[in-house]
Image 1 (cartoon, rainbow, N blue to C red):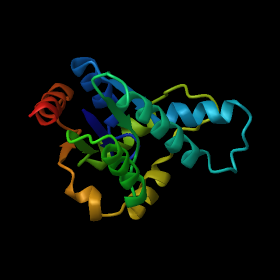
Image 2 (cartoon, rainbow, N blue to C red):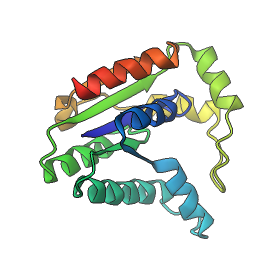
Image 3 (cartoon, rainbow, N blue to C red):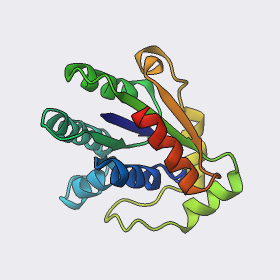
Image 4 (cartoon, rainbow, N blue to C red):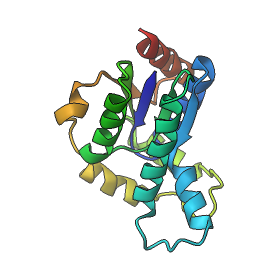
Length: 175
């Protein structure tokens, strides 16, 4: 099983991924802590550390998918087709037919902004994105097209209770 989360920062995708991972017994590979570790190692923040984090996450997921483990959940923004295509190609290399995208959004901008402004993930050297940065990310969000649009995708609105979203994600993942 290969589940790829997508959504803007602060929408709740990491929380859903963690809960889903616990219930399914899957490892969750999150791009942000990887990027934080890269920066903690002294790599200059002006370097493409975000891209590096995606590539490290891909390598970890590749290893998990190549093992007898049950699968993996990728936790990343995945706002653009090249990022999504990275996961589609990885799944194809492993013959993984149970690939799923779960896109998390927040339909209430006030709730989204409050979540973003009050969270503290304690990731060294990686600043929490500002509301302005999230608004810019929304402008850069690409529509689902090409090979990634062919993968089954569930959209979850994080204004719904967490347990409702996790139950929907669980049904989608195993259904």
